[in-house]
Image (cartoon, rainbow, N blue to C red; front, side, top):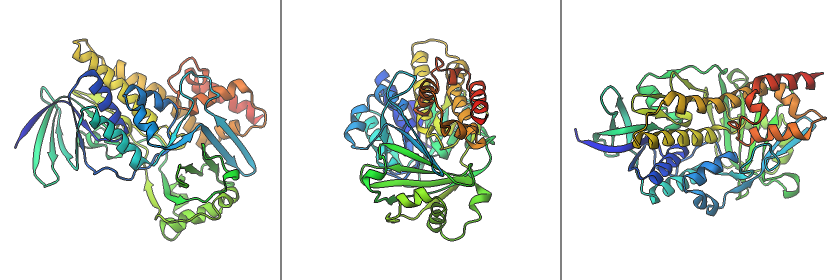
Length: 409
């Protein structure tokens, strides 16, 4: 079998892989990216957070994204029964970007991958990693090419950015169950036909079911008059609804008077899909000669759109470690990569748990909110989950618990 040698091998050309490739090319590394799919391809997770923009800029891809013409985004709106609230991400505690985009991921991911190619990364589409061995001096993977032939790639270091494909966790038996309950999502893209005056297209809309507060809907407007629409609930709740995935989603939207009113004239022109049990975790985020990026390592929940931000943060941390290794410095991957990455992930985790338990919903819909606390919460919703100067990052669990108690009183 033919064996190739690569400096840095990246599995997956999605957001984490493309940004990692861009960052590595700026360091002068040669980069080979192996992608199982052919781009463009459909993917979910269309609402970015402003913190993501810093990593896109760091990777040298900002102009590519700006020129793509995606929907501008400046915040998040929430609706429950007759209550409405919104956070403007420009009004936040943390310094940094306050705006971003809502993107069709098929096009967005290709924009980033094309930028990585422009910067000199080699991307091979429809090349699937089918085996991995990290027992030797360098990691080695076996790859199936589009014509069915196989070859091997040996690399000085390997990054798994395969997302929900979770290539290395599966091949190296690193997977472990998530501590989140099994939830599912039914989703589609529609031509929404929402009257301009009735909806702020610059914000994602999160709608809470009027009776079941752990059931929520996303509405993510795009720049072309379409939107991503989905519902998230425990699997036993979704199982109550019969019919096609589109019919089930339509029935669930009908239970939401406000959302159903917004979408009264929508054209449902794309069959809905369902995913189940998307939350995931691993035993370790790194190992001998490799590290896991983004969803390949851990995925929490889509409620706060944190997935792409975590993916970009992991790419930034990992490539900084690789740069130090190339300079001959000693790198502690646990202390320098896993621990700082999980610090922000754990902040998001605290807010996700509080959302499903109902406490965070009581906070954001409370009629008496202080500007200072709103700015701190806005910063986390904008993705600044690593800013430890924010009390709701430094002491997430305690601060949220105190605030929940005050709002419940």
